[in-house]
Length: 500
Image (cartoon, rainbow, N blue to C red; front, side, top):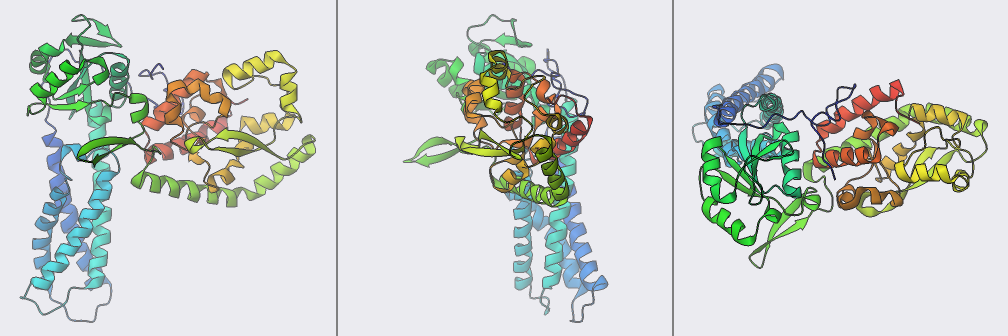
């Protein structure tokens, strides 16, 4: 399947689906090391921790009445001891390692865990400190934990946004070559180039079968695997991404023999099954053999928790606030044309399980029979999944579709755990054929009431474009993407463009 181009889906809502690609690097250029992006985190964490220790003291002992005796010197000593102690704990949690920060929610989870362990370390220190006869305040500990978590996570969130901006301008990135320019190699390179905030700048391909200097998807073939040493030196390569399906076994083993322990570069191995492995994998040793298993769902861990909270919280609030509108639309549907108020559309959900998606009925009765009686309409439906100027749509139905009001009952599907507020477009079992080899990816997430397709053209999109958008969402999911899509959906729906 063709991949997203750099500016193909930049639209009026301002929501960039794919970030504009930077041109390939021709020669090595001096730029700041990733060390200079990580180093300020130590200072920022020290400020957050010391500030939390002091603020907790002020809140507990000066702003809140405290009648038990306490030692000012003891809590001052906790500040001196606590800051370096917490920084060491943060370092042990790899919160200053470039491979474990600036991407994903795991960094924030590790920061919370490290802050909790820092609190435990302070309690242990106070227990062992024989220079004071006072017990450490439990209220002070609770306030300290809250302040430290909020300040550290909030500061890292803001700092990460800054690093993302700088990476989009070519700073704090690692030069990367992709070894193998076959179909999988091109897809991997395209994905890395479309997400510059990941911090890898693809400078070109190394391939055993292509001519030096030839162009592949806008990137230059820089050499052959046996000449990788020269490519690394000339272009300042720091990352090597190897595509095993593009190489024979001996070449692959030679690469890891030559570069697997080289401290100048990091060598990474693509999965070989990109269409499957982009949903996430787990590696577990079984009988001392590392075996890889695919995740059944794309969104796991803290991401799944946050998405669940957003789905159920948002759907519940939506149902409560929109109840009068539900009742009004139900009455209008009944008065407009004969037939049921709610239409049940059989669609495919997480794991391939089918369910009925609820919608306010917008078509005449026996709409399916009408479609069978008109082959030209049926052909358009099978090719695009939509029919422009569909004669089966009622007068009220056109209005409801224009502003997506017919889809409001899907809030109940969200509450039933069948859909998400944001996700890929829901499809019928017959439409799965359009996704081809990407079908597995689609079935690892719940369909959404809205998504990238909703803010990028709605029904005006071709089916190929819808597949591209769905795959982009699945591969690049974050909770922040969901929140931005919800805001942009409201703006697009109000304008009523692209719906029929």
